[in-house]
Structures are given as C-alpha cells and as structure tokens.
Amino acid sequence: MTRDIGPMPDDAVPLLGEDDVREIVRLLGDVIVSRQDFSSVKRQLVEGICRLIDADAWTWSLGCFAEPGAQPVYLGMAHGGFDEARYTRLLLAASHPDMAWTSERLLTEMRTKDTHVTRLRQQVVDEATFVASGVDGHLRAADIGPFIFSLRPIDDRAVSIIALYRRQGASDFSERESRIAHILLTELPWLHEQGWPQDRGASVPRLSPRLRLVLNLLLDGRSRKEMAANLSLSEHTVAQYQKALYRHFGVTSHATLLRRFQMGDGGDR
Image (cartoon, rainbow, N blue to C red):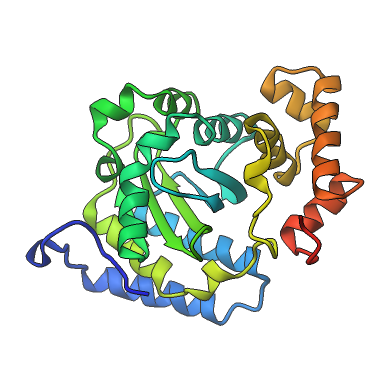
C-alpha cells in the first residue's frame, strides 16, 4: 500500500522542523515499546498526536462500509476529549444522510489510490457546501470546528478512520499539523489492522440508522437511562432497541455485546 501526504505539488509539501522530527520519533518509540493492549496503544498514539498538534478531541472508528456516494456506516470504537452530550451529537452527525455526499470526495480519493489519506476539513468538502449540509449543524451542536480526517483502507469494505478535532472558533489545522498526524498514523500499519471485531462489522450495515446509533452508544458503555436522556427517548423505547440489537448479534447482555465487538468470537453473523 502506498502512502499519500496530501493533494499538493512536491515543492509545496510543508517541511518539518527538527523539533517536529524529534517529537515524532519520541512518540513512535514510546508506542512501539508499549506493552499495553491494542485499544490502549491506539489511545496512547492519538492522544500523543493531539498534544503535538493541539487537537481538542479525537475518534478512532471502524468504517464497516465506506464507499463513495453511499451512506457510510461507522462503529465508534474509541474516543477522547468528549463528554457524553458532545459525543452523542458527533454520532448524530456521522449518521446523518448528508454524510453520503459530504464524504464522497475523500472516500473516492482513498479508494481510487488505494492508500492511506489524511486531509484537512477544507480539503474534504468546500465550506459553502458543508455549511449547507445537515452534518455541519450536528457538528456545531457538538462544538466541533476544524478537523483532520485520516483514512486507511483495511480491505475492499472496511476502513480505519481517525479524526482529530478542535472546538468551534479555533484556528484551522495547518498543512504542517496534518503532515505530522499523517506520518505518525501511517508508520504503524499494524494498529489499523488489529483491535476490531473478527467480522469487521460486516452485519452492522444491515441495521437501521437508529439501531446503529444505539449500538454505538452501547459500545461507549452507556446505560439505558443515559441513552434515553441523550436521545430524548423513553427508557422503554431504548430497551426495545437494545433487545433488537441483542437478537441481531445473538447475545443476551450488554457485557456480552461489548466482548463481541472488543474481542470478537468468530460467531458474528
């Protein structure tokens, strides 16, 4: 797999300073020698990147289905910097139908080049188009402004997706900061291949958008009461969604569902 640094001519690639290089090497070294599990190592890497580029929050998710022009389907496997309300609003943005066309340019580039791509918000979709979308409204409600998306194809269906965020009103990420993130996220390809459910979420796209949203909140460890409050639903309605998810994945409890997606057991349908 090739690596792509950005849609710029060679002579426009931002040069990194000596301090940047030292910080990159130091963080890579710390991650490589870590004896933690995959989830913890991923968190260590991305939180280190956030410190280097002054990002406010992050997500590392599995794109179960990510094809240009189609509604992407995500599993939010890890995140940092969000409280419950902000993260729920981010999930609403990710599940909005307008994601099908606001993400089309980025997904087309990744699939066409078959490579890991890292792009700034302004490179993903033009600002006027983005502001007119329903996605932007949910991101504003989540207090998300500038962002960097970094996507690595895992196979012809699944994608490893890292997003780095700043709050509304913060300055845009720079090309230099995007390059730092890209270098760090592409130097450890094994982190993108590991730590997913064994079937890489193959059955998740068959769920309705509402069930996928509840699934993501369950994977985040939310209780029924918390989900009801975050989604403005009754606890009874949330309980019915939970039961439907348990039937779909052949489990009988929240704990078993978490194990299924965190470790996999080869029995996913």
